Image (cartoon, rainbow, N blue to C red):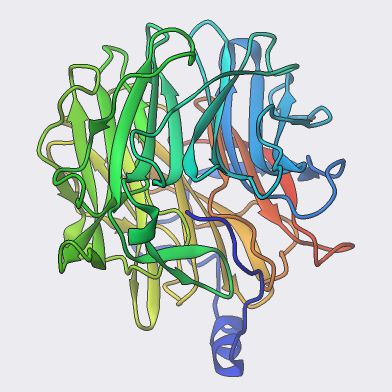
Length: 449
C-alpha cells in the first residue's frame, strides 16, 4: 500500500475491555491440537538503523541456509541476511537507489532468490513525477547489492504501488505491481493507525518480466481484466516448477467509470501458462466468507505453492464490527478453491495481516500480525492440514507486545527453510524503545503428528 501517513491508533475503552476478555490460544472445539512448536528467542535485525523500521518481507535459499529480510528503514530500504538458517543476522545494508533525495521516497520492498542463488530485491520509488519499481541484485548471497534496472512507466505522472517479485525455474524474473495511468485519479483513505487505502482510482494489477537479470523488462501484461479501470491491487506471484504463474489479487467493485469509485473487494485467483502473456478468467476465492472494504490499509492476500502442487491463499474480510483472517486451498491450479476456514481465533475489528507458506504435502503454515490483543501487536502462527484441518491452536511467536499506537508495517516475513524449519520476521515497537519500530526475527521448529 501507500506510505504510512501516521502512526497513532486511538482505542475506545469499550473495545479494550472486549479485547481483554479474548483468549488468544483458544482452538477449535472439534479437534485436539497435535502439532507443537519450538520457538526461538526473537532478536532485532534493525538496531543499526536509526528511526522507524517497518514492513519487512522475506525470502530464503535452502541450498545456502540463507534468509534475506528487506524492510522500510535504514534511510530507504534495509536488508539483512542470515547464513545460518535464521539463527543470527548480519549488519543491515541500505539497498542502492532506495535513499530518498529532494522529496523522493521508497517503499514496499520485495525479495526473491533465483535457482542459482542470485538475490533480487525490488522496491517502489517516486521521482520526478513518475512512480515505478527498482530492482537490485546480489551475486554474493546478499553481502553487496547493485541496481540491476528500473521499470519505466509508459505514462507520465502515473500511479504505482505494491510490487512483488518471483524467479522462475529458468531464472526469468516476474514482477507484479499496482499500476494506474494517472496519479490524479487516485484518492486516498488514510488511517490514523497505519497507511493509506484507496477511495477512487484507475488501479490495475500488471506483470512484467525480465530474462536478463532485471536489466530490461517486458511491456506490461494486464493481470486484472478491464484495464485501465479494473480496480485491482496487491498481486503476489508464484512461479511453478513448469514455469506456470499463479497470482492472487484484491479486486474491488468499480462504479462510476471514469471516476472509478472503489467499493467492496474480493480475492481473485488467476493463472498464466505462457509466461504472463495471457491469463485465465479470474476466480473468486472464498467469496462466501465476506468482502474486504476499501478503507483497509494493510496488504491483503498471500499465496504459497506446496510440493504436491497445492496452492494456498490467505486474506481477511471486514464488517463494521469484525475482521476475520481466512485460509483456502486449491488442488487444480487455482481453478477452484476449498471452503475458507478462519485462522485467527478472534474476529475482532483489528487488522489481521495474513501470510501463508507451504510445508510438507498437504500442510500449510499460516501466520498473522495483529493488534487484536489490548497489549498491542503480536505475531502468531498456526498449522493446517488439508485432510485434518487445524493441527494446533494459534501460537504466539513474539514474546513481547508492540505498542498499538505505532504502525508495524503492512507485511511480515514467513518462510520455510525445510518442511518443518520456519523463519518469521515482523515489525514491532517494544520496550525499551516502545515508540520506535524495529524488525524482529526468530526461528520455529515444527513437530507434526
